[in-house]
Amino acid sequence: MRRAVFFDRDGTLNVESGFEFRNLAWMPGAIEAVRKVNDAGWLAIVITNQSGIGRGLYGEADMHAFHARMQAELAAAGARIDGFYFCPFHPEAAVERYRAADHPDRKPNPGMILRALSEFGIDPAGSLLIGDQDRDIVAAERAGVRGVLYRGGDLSEIIARELA
Image (cartoon, rainbow, N blue to C red; front, side, top):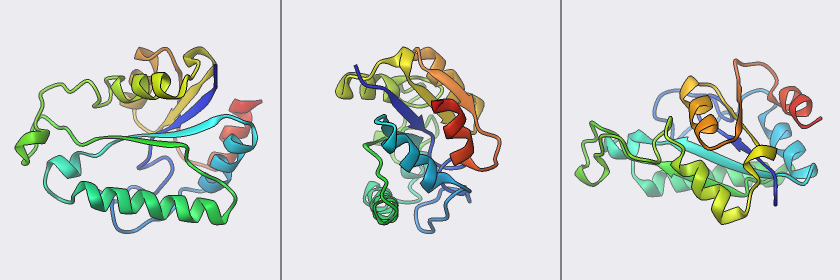
């Protein structure tokens, strides 16, 4: 089975500025962190709640374009994300098709992680998730993945420690 680092997106890989889908600013060391994961032979997977879609603030196409920009900037640095998983569902979504009281994909639920584990053949016990919110850690634990709470700083240094 394969190993993976699951990354929360906003506040972990990129600077969170509230329902971000236009301006990409990387957290310190984030690009290098993804490259270190790639170089170690692990998968790099993004797991992100995107309630801005459900709230009608932007569409799925906008989010996919944001992810494409992330991939382009990572590729220029010799890095890549192997998979993006997102949850547009929210209990108070303005867009009815995205309104769900407790969607299994919305962190702290583990649905996105469980799908990635299955689709990529990932070993949960040998993998980790890094995120900036308690809900990220809870989702990881519910999926049998070790969670690491990111409180800022150079993400590449944290990843180097965790992969060692």
